[in-house]
Image 1: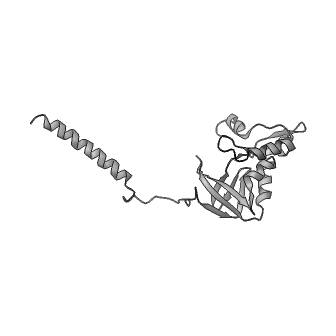
Image 2: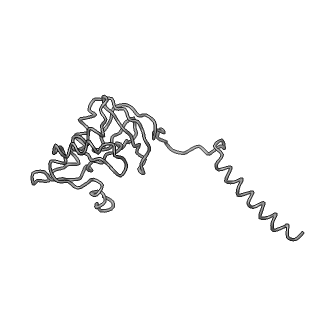
Image 3: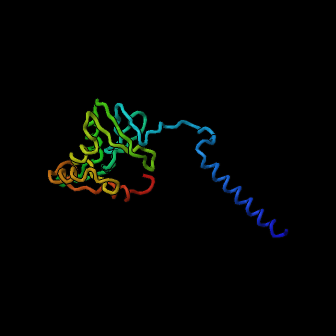
Length: 183
């Protein structure tokens, strides 16, 4: 009889743990209501409306920040070189994107969310894929680490010497990596 006590106690403890795990996994279990404002769940949904440009690869649509899928553009404060002179290529990229969306209805199909809470999406303005247009114009590069959708558009921009390819530039990802923390 003495031996059953520890076994029974162990069995009850394991049962309690299993029930606790199952309760946390139960999709019908009531959960406390979230506090504070929540953005609409659109990570894989559709966003539409007028767009406000944040930078060369990020826009805001329907109150949500949207990072354009498959591209990487210079940061707003990034400088590049053309004809032996430095210029604000990050500002140029943002201006190019602003021209693409100016006064147009933008439709974004979400593909997920990034670590900053931005929706990753393929966005179109009047049927034009904004990511492809930015890469083809040379104001963004194909972000191969995440997608290869725009590799051909990048090759065409490079051959044509368009945008960034008219001079020298540091890949936006490399430029961000070298920035001092807090900037």
